[in-house]
Length: 444
Image (cartoon, rainbow, N blue to C red):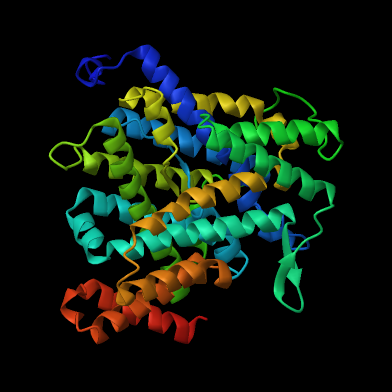
């Protein structure tokens, strides 16, 4: 096993890899709580019953999708990169696809499945380089930053810090509400942990907020610590049903946009994470990423598996850098993280103490981390600044990741043409320009 994972070549050992895997798990364990709360729309009251996904089943799907992704990345690609259902994509799934578009969650899962299958094809062919090179880096960064703002906005809403206002659309909420105060306390604690560089700061921030919530009777005590494993029946295999029972629901431009959004964000988020973690771990060779195809394939297979289990897109996590910083260098570290996700299933009853107020700080902090991509955009070039800014700002204001991507991708060819740089725009971008124009004409 040491030979397979190249322990000697990478200067690592079992102790370092186990600590690295544990550190990564603690840094991203919040997804076990945040993902089910997001996908089930638990913070949105008075919806028809059929719009709500089963919480226990989504929790199981989250843990299993993460485990499969970690095992695939660790064993096949041999990178210390962990995977789980992605933040931002789960918000797009819940708040845009289901809540705004009115697409049933069963069909949304089919969209995730299709995006994963396309991703597999791209990973096995040379098309991935073509697509990556077609979209300018500034727009990729803007998409990541925009998703960060979108997630932060949702976090503020869930905390009650930002609420609806009939005069100004949004405004400051009642900060004296117990749940809002708990969210603010959790945010302060989490920020302190992150500033101090404590591994797993987001996870520990949630944990302390939950304990304080129980002490002051803001959060109910859990009924048990270890309990019965939830059933996966409500979501398992549901992604396949629309294909056979209602194929007509998949033959729409709206569904195509959903699939492409899932694919686009996952594709570039994964590529960016791979490069970032590999650079930190010293795994890049001659400015190239060894086994990049296998890493992308692992991500794609994890997405397909996650869709069948019943969760949104599974993707590589930048939190893997915390495990690398703790000593993880090989795929064995990712395998350890996967095992811990499986073990976490036994502690499902503990999730009763994790409310929207407890998870809101995690959403806000993840948003902060994602917005850091703004520093990579050349704001001095107006033809780049305009589409990048509109991509970013349209996501939270339009309450839709897809809308932000569409607006940015429409403005990019326009600004480049009138800047006299039409030849620098890849033909694929012109094709997307037409598709998104039609999207606004016929769907919005």
